[in-house]
Amino acid sequence: MSLEENLTRVQARHEELAALMSSGDATAEDFTRMSKEYAELTPVVAAIGEWKQALQERDELKPLLDDDDTDQEMRDLMADEIKQLEARLPELERRVQVLLLPKDEADHKNALLEVRAGTGGDEAALFAADLFRMYQRFADLRGWKFEILETSGTGIGGFKEAIASISGSDVFARLKFESGVHRVQRVPATESGGRIHTSAATVAVMPEAEDVDVKIEDKDLRIDVFRASGPGGQSVNTTDSAVRITHLPTGIVVSQQDEKSQHKNKAKAMRVLRARLYEAERQALADARAADRKSQVGSGDRSERIRTYNFPERRVTDHRINLTLHQLDKVLEGDLNELIDALIAEDQAQKLAQLS
Image (tube, rainbow, N blue to C red; front, side, top):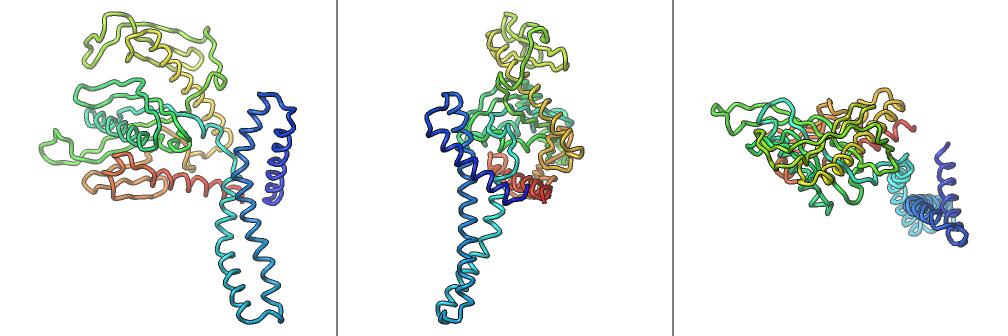
């Protein structure tokens, strides 16, 4: 479908939805669905209108500029206006094309964040804790809710694993490119010789699934309960409140023990399990659509090294887009927007290139 055909289709659908909603014939469920679609198309239609208006103004001015009856002063004004319009048109066209790109259905969803220590022992666990706090601060800056679901500490301030639910506006859309291996280069506090060590932590960001997204059969679950324990194995409480859920068809195992209530731990574990199953389905679909997903910004491959945090040089480098920022402190304090905006822009550019 050509760009012009696509524009016509979108504008026609927008008008059709407006007519259907104003007719009074739609059921409450249909009206809600149509309202959502109408709201999503409205900014697209507005961008199309702005681009077409600029094209029309330019095309109307050109014949007048070439008209012998037009005086020189008016010609100069028209030439300047045409120049301004033609300077705006490429950006207006690109904005329309970006808005017309196929949407990721999960972009509007909340997300589950999982951070795990990788290679590097205690230093990796400390870095995992730094990353977890970085995302917590980022969520705070954006006004999102950050709910810690599970942490497995090391006793010295590090995390072997930490899981959180993040809810708010466009959470997954902003965080989905964070999945992968994050590497740190710094001198550990325990290093007397001042040598720089390299450690790593793995980040996974998954859209939080709703009941309608993933159907889980009771017969596919094995649920075990056990006594929760803290760092070093000491008992946290005296009841079997911790829960381990195994999804038998996939072998995915989720454990929760942060709550004193077995019921609450089970509910949290089911949220994590649902998200992991939903993400597995999304990854399978993405693999089917694109064999070489690693060439894409948003591959989500957890084994891929995506970013390095170098403390001696105070820099952060994202290896997927070759972007280096010498503002490590700001990034670790949650100022991730420059990195994330660049990743989103690169992803859009790749998708636009695939369409051309």
